[in-house]
Amino acid sequence: MKAKLIITPRKAVLDPQGKTIQNALEHMGYTGVTGVHVGKYIEIDLAPGTDRVAATKALDEAARRFLSNPVIEEYRLEIVD
Image (cartoon, helix red, strand yellow):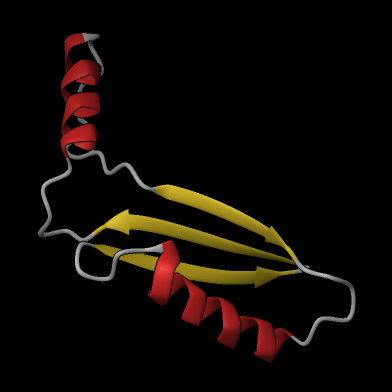
């Protein structure tokens, strides 16, 4: 099993990296881009036989406590086989 954690800035938070990429895309001729948000992607390998519910609970806590900044970021956690 793997855990996939996607962390992105909250919509109300200024994302200077995303804005820089959006401007660069426009200058390169890519039209129709109305927003870019730069975040983090973390993939965690879980040991065989790991309890899915326990892993979800533990990784959700880790995401809230130190993998993301809940004041300015939001995250999505997914456990996949």
